[in-house]
Length: 210
View (cartoon, rainbow, N blue to C red):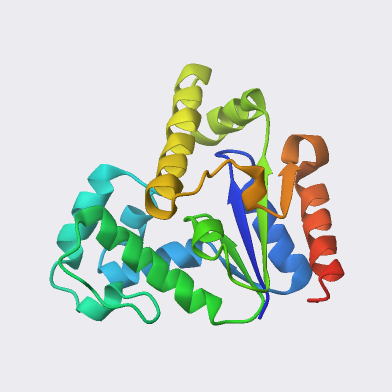
């Protein structure tokens, strides 16, 4: 069952490219719907979960409180059993992995972010893509998206990328930016969103998955 994971530097356009790829291939996109599913499992408003960028301590603390009365099996990844009480961040990782495991049981899914490339790193039938762009391009995009100045935009880009880097390192022992963890690394500034989507779709075709 083929799955495509798309990791992305903040404001590189990875989410937009993922949507284009899903549309081209006719595959299911797990992005905003993914966030909604986590919110549903956690019993929290979707907009609260949507603020998460892989690892934000204040969010983790609120999520842990919300999950305190939840059923323990919510946090189990396939075949696992709990060995003791989990801390706040571990609870967040488990509920996120539960959603990813659910997605991985389906055929032809595009899964965006949330450490999917690390969690599914050894899964057969998975194509891992990393979308990047030069820092100045990403700062400009972030400034336009959030209507902030370049200094604030750079702070956001740097902070969110670091959150993603820490999340993957601390939970999976992998380097988020290591190109060796990906099958394709694409620069969205060089090829544009449509160009990147076309190359990813072609890679899927070459795998014989379409």
